[in-house]
Amino acid sequence: MKNYKIKILIILGLVFSFACEDYLDVAPDAVIDEEVVFSTFKNSQGFVEEMYALVVSYEQQAHTFQDFLLGDDGFVDRPTKASGDIDAGRFNSVISDNFVYLNNHRNANYGSTGANSANVENTNAFNRQRPGVYDGSLRGIRKANIVIRNVEELDLMVNATQAEKDVILGQAYFFRAFFHNEIMKFWGRYPYIDKVLIDDFRIPRPETYREVALQANEDYKRAIELLPVDWDNEPYGQLTRGENKGRLTKGTAYAFQGKNLLLAASPLMKGNNVSVNTYDYDNELCDMAVDAFAGVLKLADQGRYRLATWENYDEVFWKSPAPGAWPGGTEFMFAATGGSNVQAQRFMASGVNRAIHTNSGGFEVISPTHNFIHNNFGMANGLSIEDDLSGNYGPTLYDPTKPFENRDPRFYKWHIIDGQIIDAGAGDPNHVAAQLWFESSANKGFHRSTGAENIKIVNNTGYMWTKFFPKVDGKYHTRWNPIINQYVGVRMHMRLSDVYLMYAEALHASKGATTAPSSYSLTAEGAINLFRDRAGIPNVHPNIVGDNNKFMDELRRERTVELSYEAHRWVDIRRWGVAHLDKYRRKLALDFPQDRSSFTETLLVDRICEFPKHYWLPFPVEQTQIYEGFPQNPGW
Image 1 (spheres, rainbow, N blue to C red):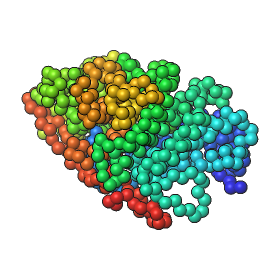
Image 2 (image 1 turned 90 degrees about the vertical axis):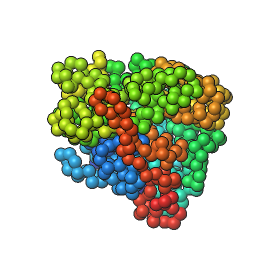
Image 3 (image 1 turned 180 degrees about the vertical axis):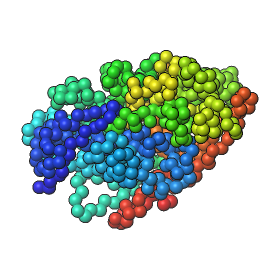
Image 4 (image 1 turned 60 degrees about the vertical axis):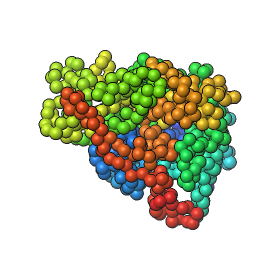
């Protein structure tokens, strides 16, 4: 019988806490047999807790000032950042970068503790010093297989009820699939590891993404059978009653089952790196995905989840409804645990210049690109700017000489634009309104060049984004109005809006915009209009609904707006097979003088993206040389 060193992991910070000490009743550094670890529910759950800790927080697991928007949506004025490496096509630099959430952070020599190895036992509160996606996922897969072997195959949980065994196994099956998916989103098809690997082994790389996804699907199905709808309603959940919101449930498993299938059905994965047609999906997998998402929507109909209203939408991102309550509101389904209050606040403020929210200088800010905003955040009539200007769908609203007027309400809700009041009570008139025009010489206020207090590159693109940035009674958090400590922001791996949007995409790809599936009564058109209704804009124009490709474009635009700045974009533009097109390569700024007498689109960077080379990260060279049968990704 092999021994395993089991350590208690205390999740630190304000984002989530899982009180693992309530579960594993052993000394922190004790070496104990598997028979002891898995003999009771409490001990077994203590082991499972470490898999939660291996779920990567994209928004907090990068460097101090975050760099987690890796698509066409954000621009960081430092090319040595991971997003800069991706823009330049330097993907080998990305996989060796210790300051991006994809990797292992081996040499993070920051903080009072000095160098910290990236491991789940690390007591440093900063997520950036815990394992990244690749290393953490492999560890998570191994832990899941250890659980399945000892609980299901060897039946070591002798002092537990059947319900307790079921929930332990349900979490293990979910995590085995989930961690495979985390690797697959960025590296593509990957061997499905369904046993504890010991000594020498050879697992050939699968030929297609689809076959791996179908193996993951079986694990998600098993998880759905075994997981509860709500931990608080189960006897084993009473130990942590009221603290179970972040734990895996039946609804979470349905949602990720559907996502796994939709990604596998997407044009990039269907084309298998040979060709790509952005409107060509695997219909069989889409139908399976729809049925999985329907499982979540039925639970929503029963009151388990609910779309946030426009009035309480901030609760999803940062505004907790009561002291100590979790962000996510009624839409919460799954997020990474851990982190620290400081790191969470840095994430929340990552789209706003430091000169506004702190006294420190610097230029590490994620500025939303003009192309991303212009192509996706449309007009108050519900049309994209392109469709509005075409005149094919009614009177035109967009005026190129007044680009900030008559826009979709979500444009104003999640951005600071030039002239917008930041803090009406700041006292100093230079601090009242956002001043985001381009100037070539020093000026007071918050400009896009050297300005007040010697702040360099205050804004790169003409906009700032504020989706997770507190604003109360018309005043944002600023250094004159320090309210951010009262709130906790979190980027979720899964929330209910995402489920509706993926449901609509999979359903439309398979059956069109106006046909409901047998598993649920909602059409793709109806699903998208839920978000239009929430934002207060008209439903999708009938002529767009009647054009399959046009409606898919509109559906994707709706997804982009609703999930903006939530780190889905780079995965989406790759799986849709569009990342190499000019529209998605070119990052733009909007330049204008103080009087707004003219507006000019300026090219910041023309991203290097070739199909299929830059659609997948390369594996570390040593990974492809362990044994034959594990080829490198194309182009590397």
